[in-house]
Image (cartoon, rainbow, N blue to C red; front, side, top):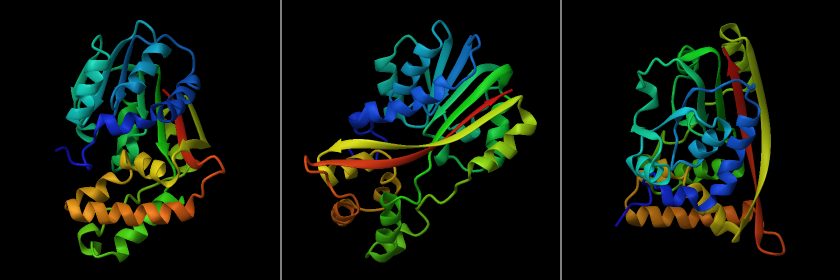
Length: 258
């Protein structure tokens, strides 16, 4: 039986339309230029790579991910492209790339002060680094995760698991502008309609923020944690009359052009 903590493509694509909309918005803001060689770092099951291919038809595209499950799903979905099992933090390819796409992945990778300039250096002149990251650590869904982890019987096991690294738009602009001809930074709050109330919200975060918390628990602990989280989520995200929950989801976008 597969653990609920695995980076499963099946779990991630339960909300594929909602998760793909931000990457479409991100690519729409990339300056128009010929893209011959592109890479999708953190490609997941291939939904972002598919969007990249539509944006840059004819480009030679590679997808990277640290999850074998995601890479297998991406290869099955898009056999015409190359996909590699790679850790982004140690990715050694030098490029040059006309477009580097990083959709909802770099929030998991540390040391942005080093990482972002290193990615810019892989760009060809006129090439762009296009990044989208969730900016929702202050939202109830994340706050509740931290509170439940800190005050349950699992507190010792889960100490330090929460994701806390974050920077604002001005920080990324200041970091990248000396290295780039153009830097565009913005923040958008999506309101995703999820049918199924609190259960749907929990299913959404099983594919992302819940993973490191559940990874530190055995099966019984996972079940208890999820039940407590579900109860708290039901209070924090009341459903509409038709049972739909509008999930507010802030995201930070960066397009840096060399």
